Image (cartoon, rainbow, N blue to C red; front, side, top):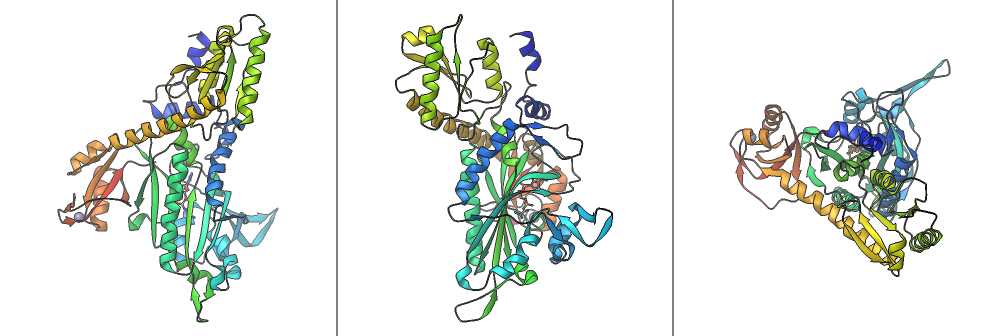
Length: 477
Ligand code: A5A
Ligand code: ZN
């Protein structure tokens, strides 16, 4: 390895925190040098990745949601209407108090989330059952004055990529079905990022402020902590009553609507980078890679025929919609490999004079490092089928890691031991006291009750009473 390359290598992934900070910089995802705590800057390459990730989200939602855009500022009187919601957010709100030097008559909140911006308008928009269901979403920046340790893409004070959907339904049951649908959508979204997620119903004390209940999806990070990467909330008719959102049912009665909301942030990008990356840099699932294929001409002198062949391959690949870079710069091939490996490009094609004689190219996979010869005739098919192999293999690898790191535990000591590397599954009677005691004793959080569990009957790990469900316990971000 050249000196310059050694210097630039990443720390071992075992020291996850250092590795994470380093890869954001060297992979050109985020610049953390912005002079406000909790605010970070997207490098263009990182932003390109973000766009691809959110394109997937849009494609999934646009089937039966509509995209919209509401104002960033929320008047204090609207923000203060829903008691539980205020309690949950009041410590986290940034307030705009002045216009220039004049104090404002009504203070304005920078949205920490948009219920109180959107629902006064829903009151005007929803008239009859024919208006339902209403399913809107927006992708915006939101502000939360987080007091826990801030971290790029993970815990932000300005969340730049807050996707929030807000739906309105005639009945409580319809809203419940939408919450399940939201979790199904998120699972599909994360599947395309090759990330397995664990959906669970949060305990009551951890639900969204103002909700009947919350189902969350968590991803397992390399250091064994979990990251909440999406939440869906059943809002019942709580906000409908506060904001007076009613519809006329088929009998002509005015009835309150039932609502849901669900959200995802750039934590999706954090999970993607963290779970797949390695010591050589980013590893991108082909679905979202800003550059999906890099072509490296192996030329010693000016070899026009090789460059010509590379151009042709590039055009062939682009013709089927593949995002390609041809690196014809003067750098040595080794330096080029290094650079594009850091950027996580899923497939590298090397083409030299000898390959050309065989009408072939050398294809190298970023995720495994494996190399194979492929024919230039149907190179686009070879590459596309390699994409789906890589996509599946990244997911399988991550899934195996999760499965390996979830363990059933029968005692608090076992829980303590297992959460150092992953997730513990334990019986819990459902009592809040036991739950809080459990969290306190092991120094970790209850994620929730898995939405799909085959089991089961056991004894609460804290009080020994009969328990009909198991819960996930983990250290969390
Ligand atoms: N209105 C609903 C959707 C809502 O606000 N839900 S939430 O508070 O749970 O946030 C949605 C998702 O945003 C969370 O599941 C989490 O993945 C992400 N998120 C929340 N706070 C964040 C922060 N400070 N930085 C980055 N992501 C955050
Ligand atoms: Zn108990």
